[in-house]
Length: 466
Image (cartoon, rainbow, N blue to C red; front, side, top):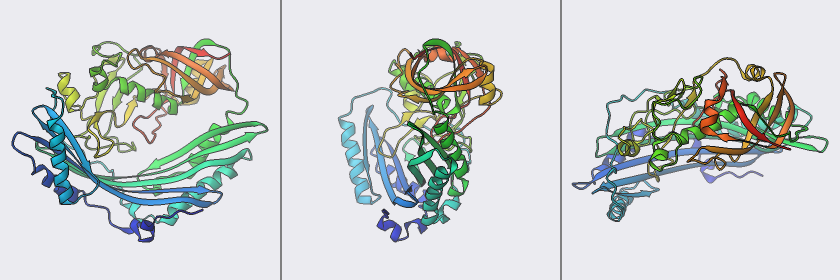
């Protein structure tokens, strides 16, 4: 079955991307509507997205679509109002400003409310937009998804099905301007292939994923995505529960990236203000093993989520969070920085023009140590290799940092991976696990989200099985 939008038929993929400067001009016009005594911020976005899915050697689904919108935030007398529209027409923009103004009148006063102000940090020139993507034809995108499925099924006789074989890309442009003097615009591209595959050996069925990400379709590596999915499938044949015990666990880079993502949530100014971080009030203290140096580096051009400016238009910059085990500070946007007596770290995040700025990392990393996954496993001797985690975010108490989650992986015996394991739980606390890090790998692996991973060994974790 093939599902093609009529936008594809009209040749949407051939249309030139929107110029970010045109969006900035729209933002400027919105800011000019501010009344005396008002702070006004305008965020203007445009995007073109493509999605293709293969099934049984044919295109099952193909969609190409454009979207655009404007978000307006007004602050007056410490009251904040937000409104947004999904078009870029002047009449709609006027109504959007009026609605944001009305919403501000009913807002709850907050002495810390206010827009971000320029802080003198220069905006880095990053290669976030790849012009090659505009020349990739829809049939080539579909062919990538079909080829991903074909190679998966041909890679191993035990590969019996593909739940999804997807291609996706996006070209986006955005601009932000405010009465505080912020004025930025830019564009970026992303491309992705990913799969979720099925394998069977007798009555034993397993699943596994693989992916590749880049700035354009030409960057994508089908072979790497296939190899990852096949390995994750076949390595789990015969998985069973293991006896309960306290042991060292090794997180592979994928699980490590998820773990660090949770750590970042606890190191945000929002978590501190809400009383939901076990690290609040501990700046300058030892909070982890001396092997841990943790930082957010949004200026790393190799990171799929790199960015030159944050969600409030301030320049992104490296933010050091933990240095050799010592807590240096937290991630902040303008509000949390103001409310905690700190300053913005250029870490404001917006999911879209519709949202108010939150706080979070762009490219969280732990400084690499030595060796790859095999080296880290060998250094452990006996333990548990964790390759999949279920319910990580719901399994963490944000106040205490207590953690209890289901995992899958392999027993580590004699410094090597042994039998597969599933239906077991690991339990500890985030603060304790950071203190118990015994080995950090050098195998930095980036994922299509805001945290990268390395192989990581953590001692004295409770494993609950049989």
